[in-house]
Amino acid sequence: MNLQLFYHFGNYILWLGQIFKKPENHGMYYKETIRQMYDIGIGSLPIVFLISIFIGAVTAVQFYYQMAGTLIPPYYIGYIVRDMTIIELAPTITCLVLAGKVGSNMAAELGGMRQKEHIDAMEIMGVNTSAYLVLPKIIASLLMVPILVCAAALIGILGSYIASVPVGLFTSAEFIKGVRSFCALQCIYDVGQSSHLRIYPHKCFMLSGLFCKRGKYRVGRGQHKSSSV
Amino acid sequence: MIRAENIFKNFGDQVVLNGIDFLFEAGKTNLVIGKSGSGKTVLLKILVGLFKPTSGSVWYDDIDLVTANKTSLRKLRMQVGMLFQGNALFDSMTIEENIRFPLDMFTHMTLKEKTDQVNFCLERVSLSGVNKKFPSEISGGMQKRVGIARAIVLNPKYLFCDEPNSGLDPQTSITIDELISDITKDNNITTIINTHDMNSVMEIGENICLLEKGKLAWKGSKDEVLQDKNEVLHDFIFASPFLQKLIENSK
Image 1 (cartoon, rainbow over the protein chains, first blue to last red):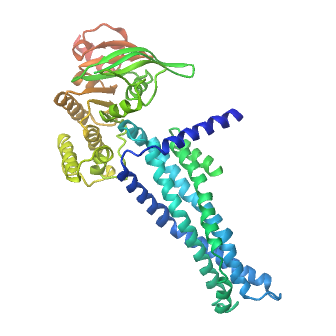
Image 2 (tube, helix red, strand yellow; image 1 turned 135 degrees about the vertical axis):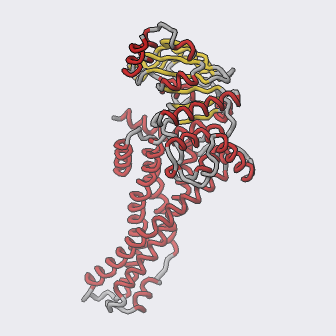
Image 3 (spheres, rainbow over the protein chains, first blue to last red; image 1 turned 60 degrees about the vertical axis):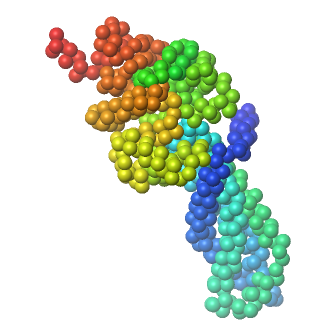
């Protein structure tokens, strides 16, 4: 068991070495990165929007009912929603969902390419497949996920506003007062946490896709294994 | 010219290739034939460098693929084209993008030069006008021809074809065989075809090696196939009941 762990770790390190080699053609890598950024960013926007708006709405409503009848001023709910969304819920939940959605897309794409001999074809042409197929995805994830997390935080706060102010739980002025008790460090933490949370699951997904054995069952197992990791 | 020298390949305890020695000649269609499980695909994958042999050498003219350094390996890769059994066309790209891919990746040609080269290759395989279609929008035979066009777009010195006739009707198979043979002659390239299609053997088999249980069982040309008394060759060629009946009737 332990030896297996060393074997996989060694393979992982060698694979990382392959990924960061000099690209054969910068233009092709750039194009692929832009395509991946579009897929990850725009492609994930609907699910991020849906999740964030509900997270924000539920947080605001739940806190209102918990704090009803206490001496805590209502504007604190805006403050709590902002902090919870920015510090924890937006990065964690968004990254978890994206790791599942985007990560299994990547594993399936690479596994499918391995099955259909696309990766073999590229290798015979002389393409460094580890770099060409993985590096653009890593760069695209690193650039797009923090943006998605910021969008999720914003949408979450908007969701809490929509769920609470129009139905009269508290006034718009109270909510905005709470939200505007601003601290810039929280946003940096938010972006930093998202990048950190993002990169490892994705690499696992890509590793499992790129090196999965032939057979649809094996591709599925690879995806399942990587999502468990 | 490609020379396989004493190739051994084991997967665990299983010996898949057992001391293969063969010379694949330039300007000729070299065929690797044999039953399923005889080691044809493993040999082809060793010849293109996808597998490393357990021992032995693969010489591309004067470069040993097994021990070559990365620079010469990369140069060598540029001179190799391969047609896969399942075509391996990138399904998210159009036919033109598929064929242009090696040019985009490895050359500094202008877009016009690349398009001209793509059109030239498509004309060479008699497929003009399908540039903007996707692989899923054309037939299996056309996909094979696109695969050939992509394999020859960088003007390779070595062309590998893994079962080019699989899944094709006899007439289309003959067209594909003739196309590969013509390209081989016109460009004086070393072509290695992995097949178990007897029509191909009799049509284009200029230099044939027969594998049996990982060993080289016979070598020769299409002219020698029917005359030779080799038992393994005889069993392989006349395995079809249809052929056996024909022989009996002729007797």
